[in-house]
Amino acid sequence: QVQLVHSGAEVKKPGASVKVSCKASGYTFTSHYIHWVRQAPGQGLEWMGKINPTSGNAIYAQRFQGRVTLTRDTSTSTVYMELSSLRSEDTAVYYCAREGLQLVGGYFDYWGQGTLVTVSS
Amino acid sequence: EIVLTQSPGTLSLSPGERATLSCRASQSVSSSSLAWYQQKPGQAPRLLIYGASSRATGISDRFSGSGSGTDFTLTISRLEPEDFAVYYCQQYGNSPPKYTFGQGTKLEIK
Image 1 (cartoon, rainbow over the protein chains, first blue to last red):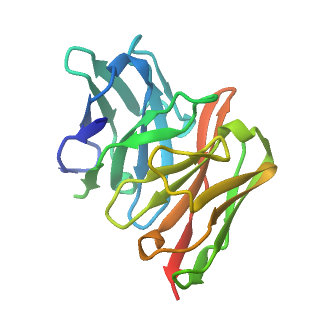
Image 2 (tube, rainbow over the protein chains, first blue to last red):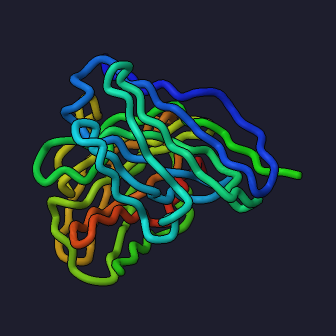
């Protein structure tokens, strides 16, 4: 079965960076884009970016440009999300999600359990 | 930039009733690029509907999606206790790639 498994919760100070991992299994890793979506406490969902696991090419939401970096390791079927210059507003649960392939795609058919990142001095 | 507005913000219904959730886009979107998700407290979102009306794998036929252009609807025909959750619509645009969510509708037990 398809699974996306996140690394554990993180606590960081303002100005620091965080790197969260998402390990995929149960399908061909290179067949689906992986996206990152975050959710601040009590808030809605916000798309951050996506990575092509085959090429490693990534596209980022404009508001995160320059602060987020997505990478992947095909040998372990793992995608990484690194967010720099953290501020308190970055406190959120960060999810990885697999993009579906039906029709034009663009939807997320499997999600990881999420990683809580807390930014606090 | 396309904005998705969901209504109502909160919907209070009883088990067995029919729920109708709305998602309105600020400009016309392709039906192929509209999806719905369910999220329960402490859990990740779960895909319900993609392409505006196609049910995801394993989703009950009590859930149905419809609409086109700027107006889309998620209908839950007979509410079960496990259906009370927050529901999000989401749209995909490709020039440049952008994935936008509505603000959510909370479906609560009356």
